[in-house]
Length: 175
Ligand SMILES: [Zn+2]
Ligand SMILES: [Zn+2]
Image 1: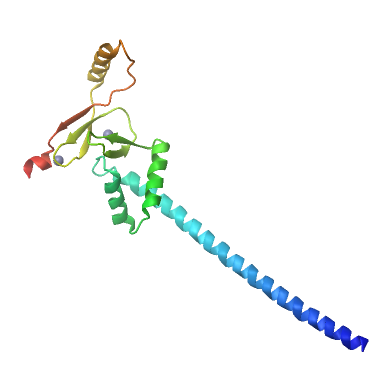
Image 2: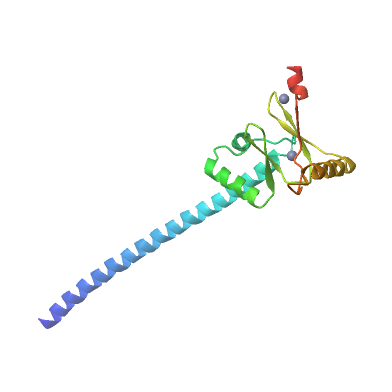
């Protein structure tokens, strides 16, 4: 009697253990799949992040203009297909933070982005709103700096001059 009972109990225990271990295997597999998906997601977002960053930087180069965030986003989607807007804005924010990119604020308050580079001035087209860079020769720049410093000297100290000129670009002139 005792032996049968014992046998019954142990086979019960066995099936219980088996169920337990198969459950463990199931959860292990599930964890593995979750890990794999997370890993794939990380790899994908990491690649995507790099693609977004690279495409933003390239968008400034040819032709060298100062696109708005919307224009940058459109260029990005044209190149990479569907891109999450949040991810794009995050990347743009990151580039501003690391000072790889800066923006020019035009009178209407729109931000135009550009790659960080040395001192330069901006030509803003009042027709299409495009912004192009131009430089002042060193002599002209220092003359302007000291002239402004003289003008403001009773109430401030000059740190840098953001000069922008407005007009009509050649393309707008033709059309
Ligand atoms: Zn124009
Ligand atoms: Zn510029």
